[in-house]
Amino acid sequence: MEISELDPNIKDTHKELIKQQEKAQKFKEYVQGLFIDLYTQEEFNRRVDAIFNETFRRNRNDE
Image (tube, rainbow, N blue to C red; front, side, top):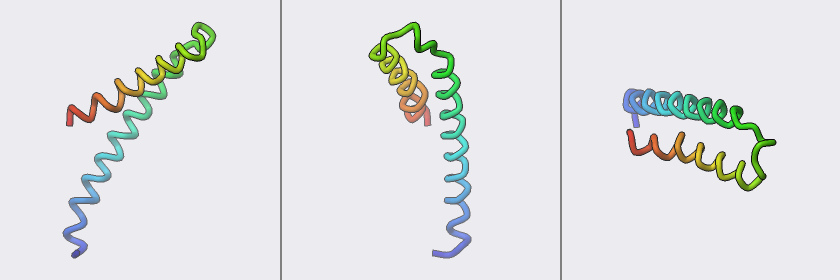
């Protein structure tokens, strides 16, 4: 494979990396907004799972 053939792949991968970094930051902000003392450990875990699914899995369908 030639270097010129790799360039579009590198650009696409870089764009995907940026998208994933933005999603990770959004997830982090959502989770930091939860007050753990308001929930049992099980409720907190469910909320974090729901936020994760909302942030990452839903956006895969948008692509």
